[in-house]
Amino acid sequence: MLLRKTALVLALTTAALLVSTAPVAAAPADPAPATVTPAAFAAAAVNPVIVVGGLSGVAVAYEPIAARLRADGYRTFIYQLPGLGLGDIPTSARAFASYVDQVRASTGAATVDVVAHSEGGLVSRYYLKRLGGTASVGRYVSLGTPQYGTYVANIVAFLGLGSCAGIVACQQMTIGSAFLADLNAGDDTPGSVRYTTIRTLQDELVRPTGNAAVNDGATNVLIQAYCPVRVVGHLGLVLDGTAYTIVRGALVDGPVRPNCLAL
Image 1 (cartoon, rainbow, N blue to C red):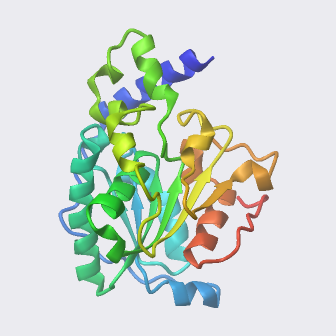
Image 2 (image 1 turned 30 degrees about the vertical axis):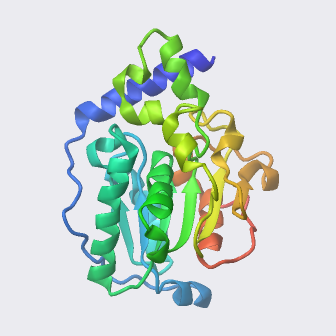
């Protein structure tokens, strides 16, 4: 079953590469103001939110979660990884550092909050831990990020496709890679940033799913620990209403209280 899922993931990734030509914007544009809902969100919305995409994730795929954030009063930006995230993760993190500076300059905000999907969570964490990003970020929320790697990356070699079919980021997300050994050496949660990770038992790409959590004081949320019958896949984490209620709570430093019936 895992082999079939992996083959499907590879096919989808290839398809995304063939159809996507959208470049990352050189400079962010501040979206039109949205109506602010609960008062708590208005207070927290002082921080712009950057939604960071994952491997082969085109920017438009993250519009649904960005729209939810804007409806809750957040100035929201979407960061598509350079080269769709196929290249070296530290290199992507350096590009992300420049983008954070652009958002801060364009909004006048001292800090931003980050909501990162999949590989985007590793890019963001590398920025925080190795590039001095903790001074510029208030909250970090990851969705299905292989913080400690995934054996789905390892299985590509088993399929006879070489070392992750030559995809550098895939190699770096392999369990036991040199990149992950460096990233996870020492404190997982440096600085005064508030760290939250969100994971799901049905994640097809992060296996084991426990590898989507981090140590050292982070709030690690397994959706099914609160909503046992909720089915959410890897891509579904950026679409699912219950997952969004966890994101929303994390952005206001609230308790973990998922709405299991949210659409």
